[in-house]
Length: 252
Image (cartoon, rainbow, N blue to C red; front, side, top):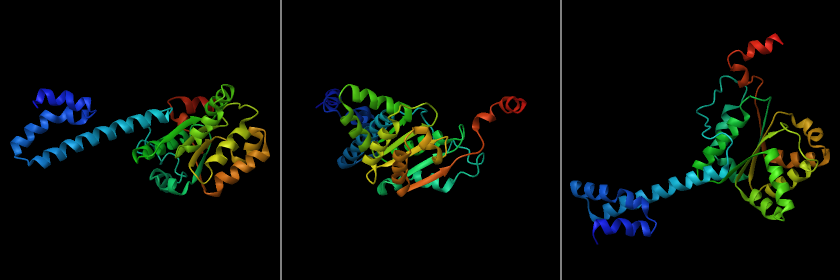
């Protein structure tokens, strides 16, 4: 088979990683006098690399991060020195997934909670795990829509099975009256099976009033904190670092 025939044949077999590098690898093999097995090995590695890159891209897209590309390297821990840096990096290692541990990120708006959980989520994806990110109000809206169109069971099953679920901004928006029951149902499905990270600008003592159902919130927190960590963020806000904002706030 000629090289011009081999390229489309590889693509037909969905081996585009090999096809993309085929001509270059053959030239390298001729120049360096590779053994046939070495050429095959390199081409197979090219294909594996391509598939790994595509899987990574697909999982990042499926996660639906609000802010793409957030990393721990881009986070200024010195600004809020009280944040438990060691715990954050331990979570980013992904080891907590094996125990189905959970974590709460608590602190005022603008203290980096969303950045941290999305950075942890991205790190976990790079380790080969699936991740889903939702703002709390978005998840509840999606669940309400699924209930109306008869796919609630399927939606809950999907959200319950993802290895890491990131629920962001609990307390930022008014939630439906069923919020506590809906969140409890999801957390119960995930309890000791999969990990959940939640961010909130409200202390857990306020969650009962926030969600309007103290009993359901208590049951939810019991499960989240049984194998859970708490990351306190704050009190400084990143938003006050913007030029002129601190002075304007002080003048009020």
